[in-house]
Image (tube, rainbow, N blue to C red; front, side):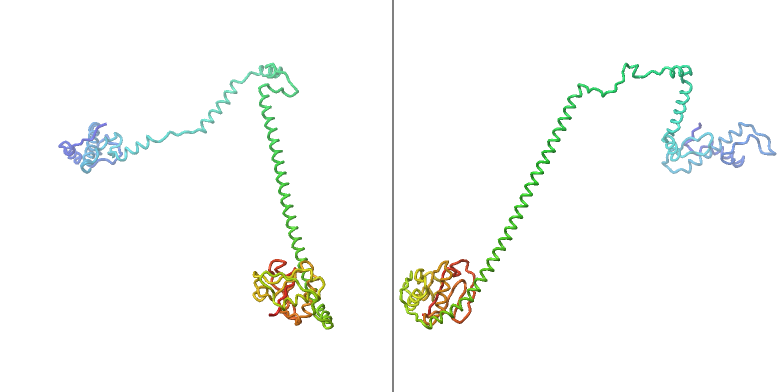
Length: 372
């Protein structure tokens, strides 16, 4: 393959161009040069025609080199069949893409060819009919060839598998025991929960019953207090009738316990009249002065007495009725009995606040405050 000349515009090229101009324009690209001269001219030899084609290619290459900018990469040699010059920027990439293209693989075609070959080999290499007939006439069992006999019973366990069987049995036993233990623990927990629930229900029922009993006792006490309040005026009326016929003359001297001096004389005279007129009053304790009392006009001043009847509520009612009947003669200021207070003989009892105890609420003694 002839290489392109890298030195353009030589004298030889200029002479060839002058000759080509004299002969006329070159034929179109891709057409083969004619070996015959034009019509009306003498014939030209084949060597002369080939020389003209080479000159045209040389001139085309020289013209292309003159048009390329300085510093460009050199051109590739021309292909003998294609007179056009090839640019390495395009031809090298196309060649590279052609070289990197992977080969075409057709696995389906290969599998089909292999299957057809196997069928053909089986047909060509099959046993002859005589061998097939002999094999069908005398069937031989594989077990008989190996010396094995048919057994209808279960196969005996291998000695090597015995430890494994024992291990599986022990594991199953342990799992069963664990399951039973879990069930027993769950049952015990349920029993404990049931007992706790029953105890809570019993406690709630007992508390409800206690509240009911307390409410009933409170209602009964209120009824008793109301009955006593109704009975006191009646007793006072009777005592007034008795007092109209009798006097308050004292026949006995009352024993008064004082811790802070003596009581006032009018208080001592009223106590003497009470113990002389009310049966059983001479056998009880009478509390007089004491400095620890919180009522300045009462026990600390010697103007109050406590008739300690304790659990004898009837005696307390009798002492109260006597004082109501002889209110003016005894010089009574007010009475306190069973958490109630009476300030006048014809007035009504006033309920006092709960002070938190039997003695503080005056359920075991009658408190009488006399005028000074």
